Image (cartoon, rainbow, N blue to C red; front, top):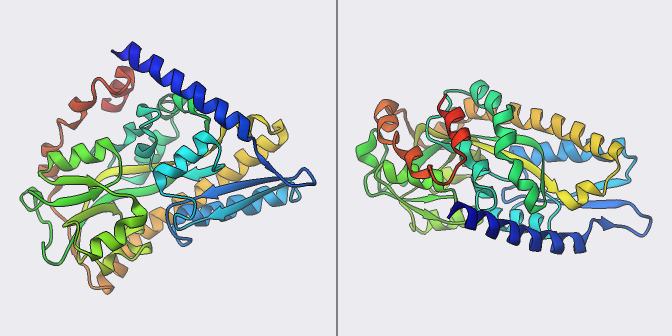
Length: 331
């Protein structure tokens, strides 16, 4: 069965690569390169702010030969559409939660397992490790090159005023909760007793406003920067899943660049990565107070029972993830 899946994925990848190769990079009449970067979130989100720095660094270092167009607020599509856009050549650059790449390369989402890290330093050490590089190897088959790793923070649960605050796993029972299309996050919510349902982030605010969900889960910076506090009145600091975001570029575009330009993009991405991580860590620490000021009730549940309830989540993915990677994660 694994061999059949592998052959199918290679066949699909080959077709996608042919489409991507036919598109090529955007060039102006003077031969300059224009790259479109798309994001599902607003311009105040750290991933977009960091990419503004990436844009400045690249354009300065190349004297404007390479320019970056930044499109936020889902202008070029939701996360799944942005990633497929990179695969098929419609979008040049994006950053999205690792789990959103899992439909192409399942191992990429491995860092989302519940309660894997206690803090940012632990998470960043893993993300910068050879284990993460190994998990991302298959992305090359789908026209994707990883330039760096942005940070989305630790995911937390918010609930509506009608539902009330989450203080324990018993408060999670039966909650209809919005999640991204991330199987690990969905299985984590199921293990906690909730009912996960997928919805594009671009549609989340209105769905919460209309009462279509009891709850949602996202990192604190995302909750604040996208004003989800206006439609959710309770925040439980569960930190149930760490959310790394590969910052990626089309492989066919990357392969067409000179070694000098590739080095410029790598160095610029490293600076953008550092800015993003610093912003997310700072905002995670500072925005709890801001969310209180906006009227959110903040709870800090005892996470021991949450950890116990989700211990079996990894067992659901034994046939999905590379067994060696799973061992490294467990160690």
